[in-house]
Amino acid sequence: MKPSEIATSFRLEPGLFLSDLEVATQEELFAALVDALVAAGAVLDRQALLRLLVEREALGTTGLGHGVAIPHARSMVARRTTLVCARLARELEFGAVDGRPVRLVYLVVAPYGAGGEGYLPLLGVLVAALHHDGDRERLLAVESFADLEKLARQLIRPRIQEALAR
Amino acid sequence: MKRQIQELLVLQELDALLADLGEAAMREHEAALGFTLGEPTRLAVARAEAAARIEPEILGRYETVRRRHPRAVVPSIDGTCLGCFTMRPTAMSSSRPGGLESCERCGRILYRLEEERREPPAPPPPPVVAPRKKAAPKKRG
Image (tube, rainbow over all chains, first blue to last red; front, side, top):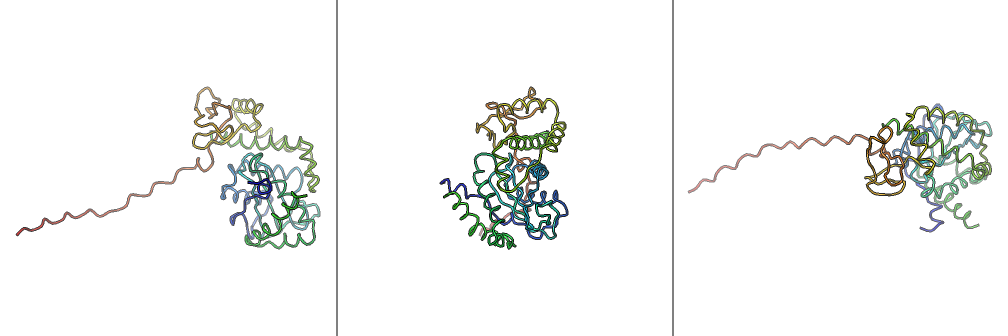
């Protein structure tokens, strides 16, 4: 696999899109996201990753505004770079930078070393898309796994390749 | 045993995050993306609490291995240590603290993957087969 292919490589599958997720707290949200990762076989241990995400969030909010949070972590129990997306049934208080509650969550997890090469490029593209007016609309419009696949195909992977080519 | 491994995995995650926070590059990257990281005061407390839940002997072994390998607790699959990828490295030894499995080659503490730890599914019940009737002897003649 070429370096550019490795960097754009991240796991995406239907079970990793959570629609109308009912959660009342951040911890419930992280638990649901980690459960999806465990069910997909993307992580080796539920408790360890859950605790990591909770403690990472306590260090500083990943709510970047516009109703979107992008929690992320490198983990010793992650198998490879994986993206989980959740659209929440109700807005969730997240201590976001703009003070607005969160409705859409993109979680990025990756192992240290091999398999985690796509972590920083993926995270960077998601954040950049959130801060770009046109791209943000596409990010916010994701309502199904098909939308997420389309976003990955049309925006995320090409942007990662563009960034690598610079 | 399973509980101690579980606690070790949590501790290892917290240690890795603490190590990341100590790296300027990681903090700079997070800041460049718009993420503000505070001081790891709560994280240090969480680390101490996680360590306190582990038996001293096991914790000591973890700390010893971690000096050589930042990833001190690794999975094993079918007898292969996923730290050094050596086959058949495991030995249950009473000399190991808490009877933890360790890789004989690299010394890392091993755990079996979650899916392997689960109870195997019950075997399906044997099929109910009606006893065969003995074929009636052919009449001669």
